[in-house]
Each structure stands twice: as structure tokens, then as C-alpha cells.
Length: 126
Image (tube, rainbow, N blue to C red; front, top):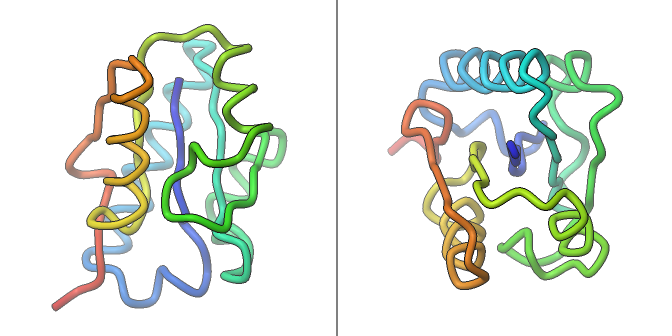
């Protein structure tokens, strides 16, 4: 499955290579949709909605709000992961050094195979 993490309006302005990042995430989403791979989106509570460009491309994908860095803390989200029955989770989004990392580590602890595409994750520009 594909997990898109925190690609939100209040975060995207500080992100390095944001135009390329958004295009790469859109490519992953389009590919996943064509192949029938489930897509879930996570949004950090209080940081607004997913950026309009991705939001328009994904109006029917489930979105889950979170209050922690990791996406796995929410019961409904964790339940959806189990329900999907997938062993591999492709994690993309922002910020690589916090939310993507914490999510990937927690998914690994839960026994998932985790893939983090380098060109579909980013953090604030230095």
C-alpha cells in the first residue's frame, strides 16, 4: 500500500525541492491507483489540509488526522492497515526526519516491509 504523510499547506512552503517532491508523490499515487494498490493519506491535525494539487488528484482516498509524529498511533488508522492485509507499505511525504521516520520505524516494529522512496520524501530546506 501507499501511505502519503503530511503533505499539507502549512508545511510545504519550507520544504526543499517541493515542486519535484509533489510531482514524484503524484506519480506514485497515479501508479498505485492504476495498479489497484490502496492509498491512505495522513494529515497532521492543526496544520491544514493536504495541498490542493494532491487533494484534487486524490479526493476518494481515505484521510486520517493525527496528533503525533507517527501515523500509527491512531486506532482507526491501525485498524485500516490490518484490514487491508498488505505486508509492504510505501511511505512518502514530509517531513522525512520526523513524521516519515517515526512512521517507518513503527511500521517496521509491527512487522511491515517498509519502502521509503528518496525522491518522494523531503524536509525543510537548510
